[in-house]
Amino acid sequence: MAPLVLCQRTKWLGLFHSTTSIVLAKVTIALRVYAVTERNKWFGGALSSLIVIQFSIGIYMTVTSALAPLEQLPNINLDPFKVCTTAWNQLQELFFLNVGIAFEVVAFTAIFFTARKPRHGRYPGIPSLLDAIWRDATEYFLLITLCDVLSDAFIIFAPRSISGLPGLASTMLVPLMASRLMLSLKKAALEPARMGAASIMDNPGLSVMTRSIQFSSRVPRGFPDIPGTPAGTRVYEGDVLELSAVSRTPRKDGPGYQVDIPPVSRSSSDDLLVARGLSERQRRPGPT
Image (cartoon, rainbow, N blue to C red; front, top):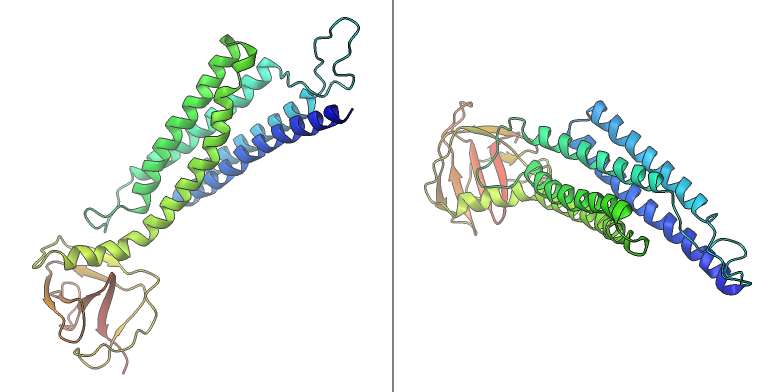
């Protein structure tokens, strides 16, 4: 009796865990796609509906799968409680997998159209948030969709004993790719603040096209005065400055460089961009 109880718990919890892992990973991806597409309700609604449908199908299949009987041997009842088999209906399995494929297609389409939008004010050579999500979403889409398509083929044509192998690979890959996507997004969010200053520091006399720079929210509001600059010069969070040409000179009061920016949209000659270490800060006359 004990092996049968263990079998019952293992089968049911294993199926429930697989379904839940996939759905939770897709919820995370759906929220990210919803944010990246600027809260597009159509994409958000479509992804949410697909998640609910797939989760409902998975729960139904998990609950009903324990009712499938084992083939009985003469005079031997191997499974009197009929709990140790996983005989899902083929149509249910195909429906479950195809809903998953539909989710991948909708998410990939949302990312594609978002990444194709014109993006202004980007640094050349600096990976942006959309670049990172585009790269990882492409890998995610190809791997997971391939697993789901193979699962369809295995269910229809392969022997029952190996029909679940692509599904197992998909179960492992979905949380893995979702985690990678989240880490890449975090890295991409921090990249412009680091790479922007580094690219200026590594290129003396750098000449750049006119563009806007939005400084990182990590720059503290009301940054204190820096020695060697006009009195009252402070750093402000969220400032935007139009640039046309840049030149740099070594700082005399510490490491790094002072980057002189001829004013374009401002009349003040004190508009400066200071690259210290691996950060960028706009400097402008502030309140004394």
